[in-house]
Amino acid sequence: MKYEPLDFSGITRQSVADRSHLVSTDVFARVAEPDAGAGADVLDTMPDVLGARNLRRLSLAIAEAHRAGRPVVLAFGGHVVKTGLSPLIIDLMERGIVTALATNGSGAIHDFEIAAVGHSSEDVGAGLEDGSWGMVAETAEALNGGAQRARDEGRGLGAALGRRLLEQAPPHVGLSLLATAARLDLPFTVHVGIGTDTVHMHGDADGAAIGAASMHDFRLLAAVIADLSGGVYLNVGSAVILPEVFVKALNVARNLGHEVQDFTTANLDMLRHYRPKVNVLDRPGGTAIEITGHHEINVPLLRWDVLRRLAGAAGQGGAA
Figure 1 (cartoon, rainbow, N blue to C red):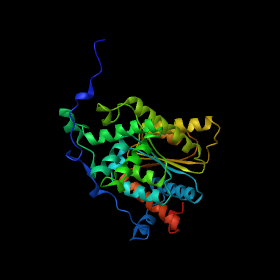
Figure 2: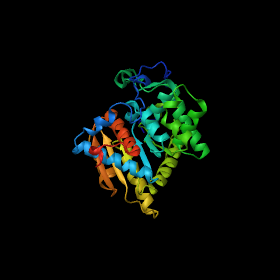
Figure 3: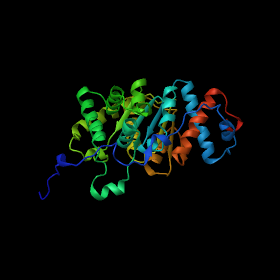
Figure 4: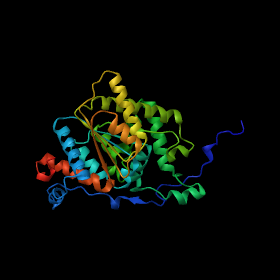
């Protein structure tokens, strides 16, 4: 052949602490109770049409699933972390409302960087010009090392990364979804596409380890989905990988004889995409809800309305 695979061992790397970032913890969301301020009145003024109606339908489904002890699964892409929503999601996890999480490689990368240094998300265009984009040592060592540790211990990538963060206790570990899931013993699965993440550009990336760790997590997610009846599955900000993973996990669960029915699926994103529509909303056969808009607006509103419902504070406009 004309070509041989490039040798990544000579890659030049830098520290994640020295890299310029677009997101830091000082812009993250703040946790508040539903009775704080005029939030309830604001939600009750929303019209009962289109997106506002769907938000109410979804908050009601989540509240009912929680009351019934059924799963609420949050699958999310990296943009959810980059828009500062981790504190609100952690609050829902600690309240027992979100019972399982799934993300792609991007979500795990941004979660780790927020925990380690309090900022994430670099200027890709600037770094791509000289090949420095994604070439930070700590992130690659954590993600690639986590995959090898997961493979060696026979566990999934999400659990391995979460346990490592708890053990190392970096400065912002309290904002880590991975660490919180490990602390609360909640399923957190990470679904990686080889070559899709910056850490795969490093010499210590072991495709066999990444594949084994991610495969373990796929099978774990299938177990979660097998128990989804009466529950809610939310796809937030993933246009390709997680919708594809979800529909396969659902199919495996049903193939093995699990009657997964009477559940709600929801897709929240800034744009309508093909795969979330067909794989999350249309094909599974549950009640489907679509909310199009910015995560940093819709997710806080959704959390607020869920908590109001559970506290019995939702007004007449939120009774849908």
